[in-house]
Length: 225
Length: 221
Image 1 (cartoon, rainbow over the protein chains, first blue to last red):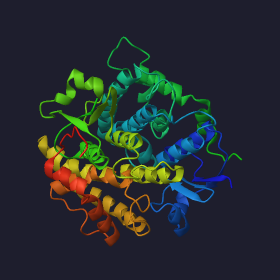
Image 2: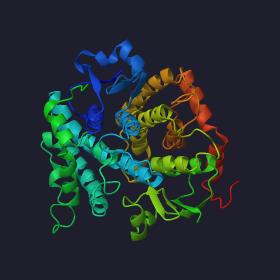
Image 3: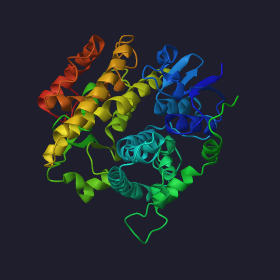
């Protein structure tokens, strides 16, 4: 039976990265539209699949899995032989991907989500942004990007010279910052004023313009069978 | 050459979970202490190993790796057949369930624990005032998540099934810090969560680590 993806149509968050892996690896799937606005993610049937009541969730021929990062690893592993290689099997190569995935959640995600909550989340709910929180988030994110600049000065991508899940997972939320008027990722100036474009902004533009991602952002998540 | 662990003796944070995996899997290692109060984590030498200037970090015969959860996965993958079995299973679905549980720890557990730790410890240690409202809110959110853990742990003994795995082990990174501050997040939770927490926090290797600190072993014990 074809894989089912329970999500919305917007390519963002955990749903965005799962949809991108499905596209990069050309994995057929059916989108089961789950409408958060009407609480479809809190029904007893849904909670039986995902006890925390969130999207995305997959049902792969009876095997149910949630958490976007876990689903991405599972799909990349199961379909390692088709589409874009994303999750190397070698012991050290994989460890470096896991290192960079962990860096994303420990160092990148917290300031990104702090800014995103202000510039995207609050306006959506008709609330005022708190500029001091935004400013603090930008200071924190810039400090982390200064380290990414060092890392990306040595390799083209975060875990080596190939695009992997580690880079892909950064597309969970950071692209929304530009939507909210804080385009720090493609305008990051770096600590060395003589080097522009910076490695960070080059890397960001590279991963953000991958054809599968551009298509997803433009057209939304659609099942492909 | 024996594995080098750049960390400190105090069993907390990322150092704690890496030290636990080393102990559970009986992997010999040498401890190179990195003293945080004197900023040994910010020396040029350490920044070459760990560009974010943090601990822990390992050097496995020239292969340098940081981020404790990545190190734990690497050690389990490298030494599948020795010590405690099944921490990071190789079967496709079994491993996916461990990753699901590990991701839950990352998104539904540790953010709230760290918020409380920041308010009650980090801010005062830098002369800033605790915001009790933040603490109360974080604990309220955490307890809602632990209500879901109660459901999960009513179906399986551990988070990813009936065996102890990295998904459970990763919870020992942050939660003990709250106990060290006198904050009890467990004794008013449901029976399944309490059973599970008691099980994982009284594993012999963990108790020994907390009692003795990180102690290098150059031969397998």
